[in-house]
Length: 426
Image (cartoon, rainbow, N blue to C red; front, side):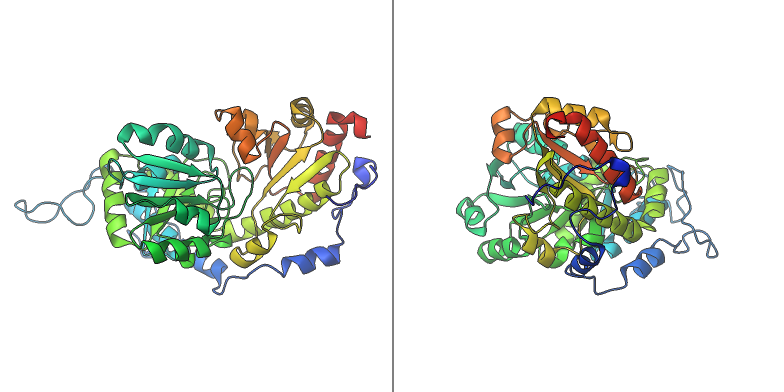
């Protein structure tokens, strides 16, 4: 950690702490930049494709659950819309948009991110083997640790993302590799491209899945890095307004898509047309929102790294992050996620959360509103203590989801809360 700065009155804190404005702007230029004009693509893909009205700019919300069939009564309804669980114009518009944004041939939407996870894993059969790397999103992690064994699926957990470690545990019945990068809540980065190349060189039939919730297609493109399927909790950054629950899956693999679509239709985990409309609305501003999340969070990470009440900070944009160079190579930036260890124990962490005034105490992330939580007591509270400690999720580790407010106001709020929580360091 950088040398701690002296504490000053919170209302005197500048927007840039621990780094000058010039150096901050210079650091942003080190990240990869998308080759295509992503902002234009987003707007173009979210305009009504002329489903019902050629003059409408906005995709309509089609609430009908049943559609009239116009073909001969002797023929089965195998094309077009007939029953909304099997297909809906508003849902299809969102899925087509999502596929374009992720550089995919196919996309499917679900009632929640975990429903998308289920649709992927349920392409497997009894006695199939899954390699699960490190720790990921709380609920999907719970599914892999507790539920899939009931279906006879073998899940092996490994705590190294090194290619050699993954290759060593591949078995004859290995069918899937599950990754998340950055990981929740530790913000560890895995080399997606190197892992995909190494695994597919050994076994092309192993499905490599990546949870890209933290970065969205704006900041990371897993399919372009060689993976087979990508899953998102749309509830988080893709939506960005904390007003819906949805999931999405993208792939270029036609056979995998067909099986996942069967799971989507037959198991019924579909989103409502209204939620799909809200998602299309949200995608219009996604690039701008992600840039603001990124710059706000990076300013805060530099501030925290220089704070007397902070033990250490986890953010891929900091040179102190163990995977900083990999993040610069693999990502187009970072989201609003920041992790840090407060000096003290659970008592200090809880006092910090209770003292926040702009940040809100909540268990989720990716919203326009800044959110703080203690993963050991929230998203990952169900993990046994030895597992949490193995992953570095201690009771003094705090996860921040930095929103769209003024960075200066957020820094001032964090500073006053840290002062109240850790009085011994004043």
